[in-house]
Every structure is written in C-alpha cells, then in structure tokens.
Image 1 (tube, rainbow, N blue to C red):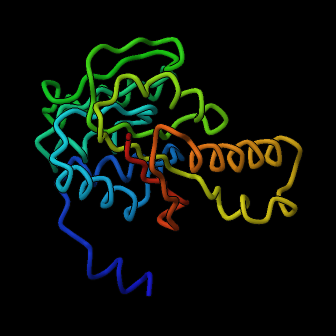
Image 2 (tube, rainbow, N blue to C red):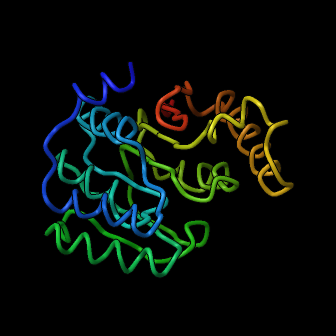
Length: 204
C-alpha cells in the first residue's frame, strides 16, 4: 500500500529540490519524509498559513518546500554551522531569500518577534517540550503545531528493544513528550503514523 501511495502521490519536483534530496543522501542528513512534507504543505494550504516558524532547518529542504508550495514566509532556526551554511546556499539557489529567513543559533537561546500561524519542530528530540513552551506565545490563536519523529523508528512503542543507554534515554524522553503534548492544556493534539510519527496540534 505504501508503494502504491508513493507512486500515485508522486509529483514532479523542481531541479533545486532534486539536488537537495541528493545532497541529503550524500551528506547523510535526515530530512522529513515525503508523507510528512506533503502533510505540511496541505496544512499550510488548508489553514491559509501566512507565517511559519521552523525549529531545525537542516540543509533547508522543508523550509524551501513550504515556501515553494504556499504563499508563506518562513523563519527557520538551525544550530549546526555546516548545516546552516548549506541551507543558506540552497535557499539562495532556490531564489527564496525574500521568503525564507534563516537564523544561526540555538533555538532555546534565540528570540523571535511577531506571531506565526504554524510552528514546525524537527530538531533535537530531547528538547521538544522546551521548544514548544518557548515559542507557544509566538503563535496566533488557532495556530498549527507539527512535530516530527515522535515514534522514533517504532522504538517509542517498544522501548525495550532500543540498544544503548543513550538511545533508550532519548526514546523515553520522546514518549514523555508525547504524553505531555497530548494532555497540554493549550493545545488540541493527535499523533499520527505518518513518516516517523507526526503530531498535529491546534492552539486553543
């Protein structure tokens, strides 16, 4: 079924996207799944999103895809210097400098101004709750929050098979975040088996 959906949902991508996808493989840089980015783009269109805040730029793939497929302005934050430089290069090549503002820094130490219609969190998994709490006041009422990798390769459901203390600790932190997100008083949330597990929250 997944192969069928992948084939029927496949769309022609511009050259810059093909280049970035190849770049991600060569650099072994994790990026959002096809299912995940398609969901984000549909949410942007359905929700008539105008301003997006992204935590975790990586090499710029998701920010560029959102900017190419919606009438949105994206502010994206990336901590890793090499990823930040590569993302800047890709954004410039895509001619999206006016639609995408990229900030180099630790998102927990960076302050952003203004209000956003969508917050996309795809950075250090152990810090998800801190990211949410830090930036929730920058969200408009009814804003959408999307978090990626909440199933962590299925290990959240079966943490006993996780190998190594570091991975087990991370899996437990993600599971704890999932519980807190679902019960968060400021958001109405569901977690879906899309990509590696994605949540969609609506700010009350």
